[in-house]
Image (cartoon, rainbow, N blue to C red; front, side):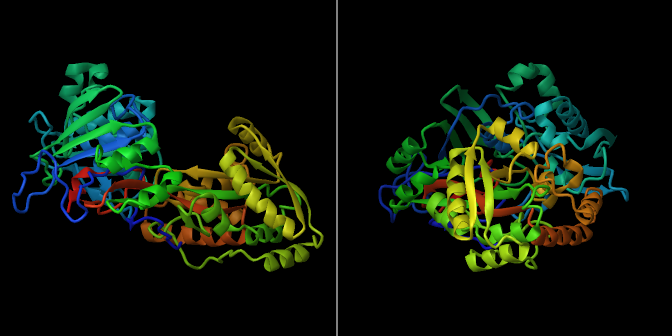
Length: 519
């Protein structure tokens, strides 16, 4: 996949939002706030005001599937492990781990002398309590849906048992749905109060939550992974992204998470601010009903792939925000390969493939979409298809009706998008390409025995080298047989003061603020 940055600063992946910092009056000077001494040599700003679209519904990490809440709790709590910008698991509360030969048991060695914000030391009992609590909360399932149980081995080790081998369990445990909490604190304050006054071990301590307005955090000076340069953080609610941009330009806020694509051009006109973006976990795609003629013919599907004008979709509709793609995973994903064919926009190739498939004069078909955005993509495709003799009618439906239509196989072509929680081939496209999911999520009705066999093996393989081989083969087959055509990889962004240093972009947009700093 080739990256295509449209911003003033392109950051690496790691993500759902990003945080920013204040604009200085003089583009050549370091930004100043009340936390900065006037004229003091070497002093830099140490506070940050970040805007995002909504108020957290709860600050209980086990009970809030909301990115505004997770942007807060990510910085208050720690998980057993953390994923770095290349999707590799790194130690956090667990300083190391071992895996049983069958891949069902993970023993985590718990780091010693980690302290909660109230000064009490974290123990193996807190880890067991946290995982057991997460298993009881449905909203924490992204972290724990593969976990069967947990037990304390001794004072420094905890064993997590899985329902079945799962190669992405560390990535799941790194999600903010399942951090390590204080058993004593949660039990003393109760679930309701805990959702209002969180307390963890993370780089920032909770100070205040003014409902509908802001959440205030301050740096944990005893954080076991090191000191945070930014000492004071306010996450403020600004629902209107255009208004947020005005606030950013005036210096009332320092950063805003995920401005709209329509505001990108305005943001780039201001030399005091920059937009930081990186790959999200999601993409847009065209899919086919592979059980229905003529799209049961691979040459027809390939013809449509060559007629897909990705450049016009990216530039004309998506304001050049995103990345044109030919496969369903980024370079950092296990199994990514450059052995795939590139389906560049080529109507001559598309027309030739139609003739080889027995449709020299084209045919009639429909394109189903669930929203106005996908309707615009469909118009671009419709125009290209008309050039090769395919007469396509666009049918836009409400999402619920769209799912019924595509799930029932009552369509020819459909355009949609997807998002997922970990960088894994099965997670990114298994729902649409695994034969065993026909009748459930597989609305392409693609059922390749070899691909099914490879998925079966992948789902129980924990050896990363072998998993890479499996996924590479799957990607090559899917690229040739084209049950779906990915065309734009999504990005997350933060627009911020140009002096704010963000070393990598979190693809979830939760943002680990400890790594941020003012230049």
